Length: 112
Image (cartoon, rainbow, N blue to C red; front, side, top):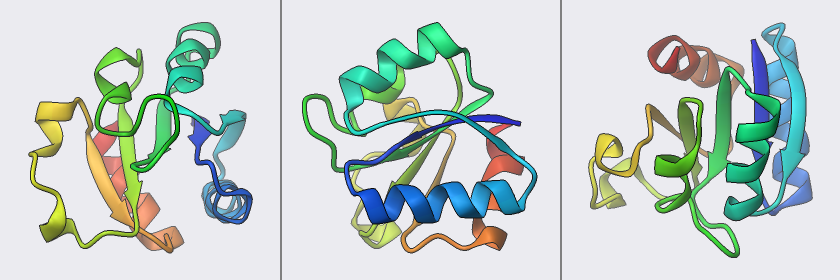
């Protein structure tokens, strides 16, 4: 599975990439902002995008509806704190941080 990772925190991006690679996924790109994620999704054509909710320029509530691949939202908020249904923002699944390999595996199964 080809994955684009979007998070403005270096440590979080490394952690996300490590979990994805443990599942045999290939990281084809990474960026720190929502606008860049939209552009990269069109250029790289990932199978799925792992996107933090809190991003500069265009956040994880705005960017998913413009992406050309399924989006899995990553957040440090409780899932009950999210006020909008995931489908309304164009997301396929949501994982709370810190992510685990098991949670990522389940989210990938739902999103793809």
